[in-house]
Image (tube, rainbow, N blue to C red; front, side, top):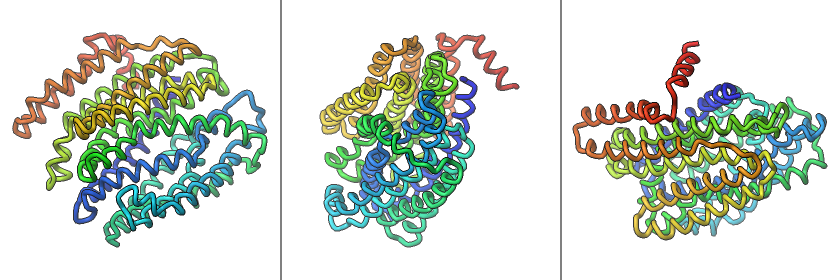
Amino acid sequence: MLRRLARQSSVYALASVVSKASGFVLLVFYADPDVLPKADLGVLGGLDAAKAFALLVAGAGLPLGIIQFASSPALGERERAAVPATALALAAVAGCVVAALGWAAAPPIAAAFGMAGRAEVVRWLAVYVGFKTVADVAYTVLRQREKAGAFVLLGTLEMGLLVAAVLWFLVVQGQGLVGVMKGYAVSAVALAAVTTPLLLARVDRRVAAGLVRPMLVFGLPLVVSGFAGRFLNLGDRFLLLHFLGGEATAVYEVASRFGGVVNVFLVQSFNLAFTVLGLKALGGGAGGGGDAEIHRQSFRHLAAVAGWMVLGLGLFMGDVARVLFPDDPTYAQADGLTVLVGGGFAFYGLYFVVVNVLYAAGRTGAVAATVGGAAVLNLALNLALIPALGAAGAAWATLVAYAALAVVTARLGQRSTPVAYPWRALAVVVALVAGLWALAQPTAAWPTAARLAGRGGIALAYPALLVALGVYGRAEIARAAGVLRR
């Protein structure tokens, strides 16, 4: 099953590559003050956070519900077949309600973001949320059926539509922040128009009324936990806008997009495959056998790879930013923020491993409680640290909250399924990243060629040190090399 996980994660990573590449293409234009004022880039970070919260509410916990119910051996074949159409009907209703509320409440929402008189921005965002909620059902069905290749093709189509639409309204039409939201909305409408007929042509179109209540009972606690999880990831944008204003938030937004490479390339692609395979391994789906070994091994591998990515981002983010944004040196100076944000996402990935045990046991209430507690911790730390440390306070708050969430969730999961997670390996990874990052700091003043060479050597030392410190054995390295050769 580990091979299936690696294969599917690598395929899902292709979609992540497309998504992140398109994000950086757009970021180059967003960071051009002639196209979008710097303060508006900070506001855009807040709007993207609001978008994520609205999509979560409109989704009503359906994505994980589709995976759980369509794979559950407790349901008959006829009931499992009706899950996609039932979820699509629920998504259509929820998407319409949330979009209508957003449209009606656009003026006060816009004022809350410092955009009084620009309600049109929020209204286009509401249209995006409604149609994207419907389109996301097709994505989840592809995940549940382990159709990773089709998922990637669909994601590539979406990103192409999004980039083309945003650039048309933002750059060609010169409509600023309104143009960005128009691009979002047009891409979601087009995506829903493509995916919905294709989905209905390939599934049982019967809506099972008997599934509605169980799916909502399962999913609604996930909205609460997801809401708290979104706050962990994105809530600091609101506080940064409040305390520091749009321009400082723009710098944090750029650093977060670099740190988000860990989330998009590794964590999300891993989670797309692991949630399905992990539930099946623990007996949550057909073919399950209560095997938790995939969780133990995934914890170690994910920690090691994520640590290397975090270190690499911190070492080279500044030089990349100097190329992308030559007119604004403040972005290149945000490499420390990138390390902290990336580290938070690394712990977020470990959380996905350990929380899978609670999902398999049906303990979604416990999930909501732990994520809610982490969100409260994050809020308290943000309020205490942002006034004192600025944007670095927000990054530290997120890192600490994600680490606490992963540790507490792992301990709760032990009551359902004991798993011998390799905590020593995680401690070694954290120490290596911190130590090597500190070792690289004097190179910041070196000439470019010498700095890149020195930091490249530090990055290459990381995997060798993992072996030297016992995180991986020589026999494991030999087996991995053999797999790669084959």
